[in-house]
Length: 328
Image (cartoon, rainbow, N blue to C red):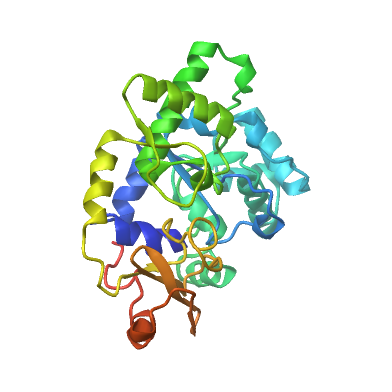
């Protein structure tokens, strides 16, 4: 998958596909597809957003109100089977449903998009997202039966609305979400989380952050210029921000995949948005996007220093973040 190669394979030291899969099979991790109101994202492709969460914390991120309505007839049939029989292997679903392989894939893909299913392994998700030409090559090499993924599909747990839970439990959940966001972003304010789709309203998070600030567990202040509203950071992040302010940033910067979370152009930083894609990449200079490649098309962005443009073009042409470290 795109972000396995372009994000995890680059950002995680000694990333191993085998070890990654084992963390799902052991029950440590769980995946789900966050919902989206953007019509352009209403499909499941290799660049789709996928949430990976500790299984113990699944209730924080999987709420009934986040799920999307199911209209696909194949998906409805599969969902009914999973409701009756519980977790099932792909082959068992195929046999019990009587669906042809293309219809089975279509139904599972619809359920993944809607946030209705997960699996106890990661390979079923790869199988659903894998392009048809790759599946055809695998089936030719292994046979149709052997090409099916390892792992069982299951429905996402039924978790009630926030109003169904005691206030103390809800506050504890909000605290856990706040710390997850602080670890993810370093500094949290309203604009930072605008792309998040599995969060409670900002007003609830704001009250939780204020409680943490009153207890001395987080710092409130003005850490990032140019944004209104309250901002919060972990105490250790404040020191790191001060240290970074005094560093020399004359280097050319770094090239990242457009799928990387640091691709913030058009969201938090100036310039256009760069869509996720295997061959799309962005050059950051002093933390800001100054040039990008859309496939093989180079484009200088506002803020590109004229004297660095030749170097920028060369770096974006040569450097691809997911190459040089092969996922094992």
